[in-house]
Amino acid sequence: MKRLFRYTNWTALALVMVVPLGAERGISKKQADEILDELRQIRQLLEKQASSAPPDRPLRARVAVAGAYALGSVDAPITMVEFTDFQCPFCQRFYASTFGELKKNYIDTGKVRFVSRDLPLDFHPDAMQAALAGRCAGEQGRFWPMRDRMGSNPDELDLNHLIRYAAELKLNLPTFHSCVTSAKYKDAVEKDVREALRIGASGTPSFVIGKTEPDGVDGELIIGAMPYQLFDEKLRELAR
Image (tube, rainbow, N blue to C red):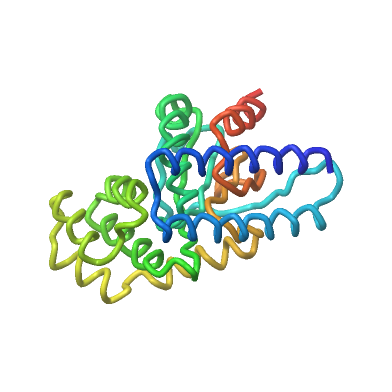
């Protein structure tokens, strides 16, 4: 259990980092309650993993990436898949504190292909709508800019805000509105959710990191908004 214990410590560190940062900015009672709810979810998940994981072996998963939005070179030797919930405060923490460094040091340099898949959680009322909005923006070639806006503003994902983001990105608004409100891509989002549950990624954000394969990645499953240092360590190991 040594390796899993190390990941549990990383998770504890990541969570300790989140709460003080929020406290410095001042958070509402609603935000505090949401963070506590997320902490309970992650604790339950870690306890489940600790009871089922083989000794000294990390959790592993194989996932496909066909049809998913990706950043980085298709020839990158390493693939990193994120299952995300745009209303999740820990996904926002990953985006704000870790993703930029990963993009600069690994994605933009051709070392890693970063793939985005959806995992809207039931207790986040705007998460499914946000997942749909990302795909509807992608229909007009603007998935990543929309993802940036939603990832930066997890408390502002109601339809009015999504329409505002779409206007800022100069999307065709009637087409975007119709796409979101008709739930055009709901089946595709739910397919991602089923895939996440199949591999045991029941919390957000969750990642699968490994050597690139023709149809996806067979790699290590990591759950939680871990600090950059953990991802850097894993990616360096894979690059050897």
